[in-house]
Length: 307
Length: 273
Image (cartoon, rainbow over all chains, first blue to last red; front, side, top):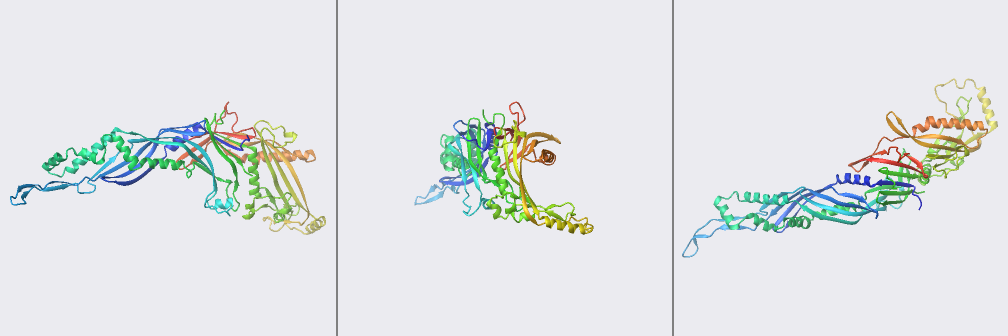
């Protein structure tokens, strides 16, 4: 095998330190809302990365393991539209000739939409885990904005030079929701209690007692409306993953990052080694046979100088 | 053994790649390698060696030649000169072991951790007609105090029209090594000249004197200025990552850094993130 004219190798240790530095500087966030029938949800969601390891493998892949995705911020506002309820209005003294002489006052509640806004701040309490293996792919990119008549120097001047690009090509990629802290359940219960107290606080004592007697524990009612059921983890996971699409959001960002439009590194071809000097053109060197390989110990980039 | 067993980042550059890069520089910046007075600059086809350039040089109307004054003729008060051209026509490098350049016996064999350079320098002189120069000499001798006026001003050198052009090319060879030196508390990578040879100049004393003169110019005036500060090189990676690169210290595992071996120059780097 011919020796490459340019060889650059980075050790696995260097890779791991770069990984840690990049990981600690990646954070994304988004916000939105959705109407889900009896309740609505608005969210402000972001994530950051923690932990995880990166290993260079003898099969030529870079493996990322157990990289935690911590959702922070994760603020949900659940809007609950409780079916309209009216009490009273029944006849106290009926009219023997028809109708009613005296009726009890009629009081209707839950007439707004939503009737209850339930702010829930569970930032940092939900985590996912990413694992995956990637091959390093090399690609020669010709900018679509480059006209066929352009020379390499014209293309550089126009900001559309050809590029050698290095991409992380996912062999497999996995995202799991692994933990919803028990604290989330307590926060949710407390939020519901606060809402109930606030919701009924304006009523006179007798009416509050009456409504409670009629409706039973309102927290149970809210849980029923939200369809929380017995398993809070499952419910929240379903809400975040299916209804809001949080995990799709994270996976999309991760996949986009690694996908073809986001190379981890690129450089111009021909590569400028001397800049413009007055009117003198820059000196540019074509690079050929650019390749990247991975083994247990290091990642190696090789290239030859074109003629 | 892995390439990065004793460092974070390893780089190796083969002599073939270096030589191709030199060719690219010569073709894209020809005016760095070709010097001549106006006569040759306007007639590049009369230079000793044809100047081969990248098409973009012509397209962008870049100069092929750096224009210099004619060579002054002593005794004319700096008013007359001879047109000339000087070219670095070829340059090659050979990293140990020596196999890309046939070194002259005086410099052979190439030692460990050495690099060899070969270059072809061509010089052309536009030689004036003898009768015309005699006439000019007589004319100048009959003029009195030609230089008495405007002594503070450097006269424009008028070239004497040429009758024919004399060209010659010299093959020169040098051997060098890299050294790390500390100056004012900072460490630099410098080139040290080990040997210099001009081939086929007679008499031998002239060759020795020229070699001594050129080697002194290189050691005193040129090579010390070609130095790279290597304390720490800082690279920005994205907007949030700063890499501090430093040559791996010399040790039993890394006895030379940079190392010139296996037809390559190898660099071992430690990285601070």
